[in-house]
Length: 311
Image 1: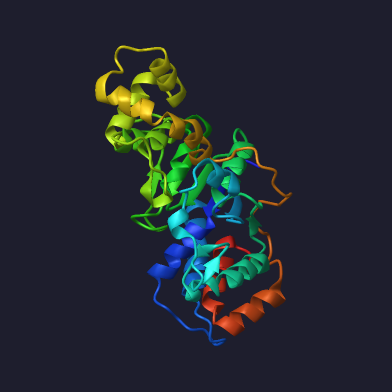
Image 2: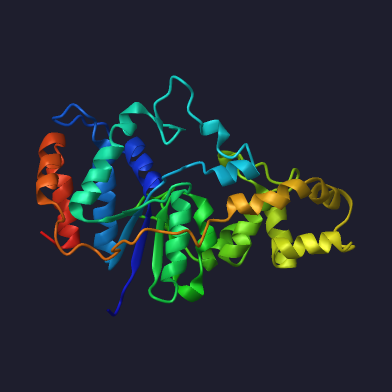
């Protein structure tokens, strides 16, 4: 099929944004529906504008995978739910959102939109694996509010990120290599990942190398080409790495040994077989009708069905 394009959704990023950005509405069932409405409306907007041929809602089966926590125990530790918190896969989530997530799952199933999650992995890993699988087959747009996925940007293979943190899905930042270079001073998605390891990310509980900020991290990666090359130069006694900077990098050696495993998305996870093509018909009209009536979602479903051109 000519003009194929895949749209990969970082689902939790989008439904969290919908929950906090859309005024609360209580449906006929008594359950709030703002996250569901917002998420479905986002899908409709993205499909209407981008006209993808393939669409996948990528899912966090495990938002804090054991292999990442084993490497860096502080990874997302501040988000772990306490005994009195509502939780989704262990993460603190407002109760008014947690009750909506199963409705989103059912809505995707009713519409026939592929949803993919894998145990022991985050949605980022699903996205990384799908992006790798689709490389060379079609362009890929990743929709997220998470900078971590900038590492997937690859102009040569037409892989972009539609970054929703500022303008939402209606006016996202289109992140390509030029955007990364202008914003962060590194030239590729892979270089962004290396820079992010050095810099760290407090929002994910990643300390980075103490004393190495974003600009210094970018300069080091640009100078040496990669984190591996930087570390080789450090071990080899490169005279350009001296004084406080050398001391900081040497002090951070144990962190640098394990951090790439945490920061870099998995690209070779075993995914279930799934049809990523846009649905050609509503998969379960009975379920869609029930959800629409019980939760007052008729207009949201109508918009998605119209966008998908299956109505």
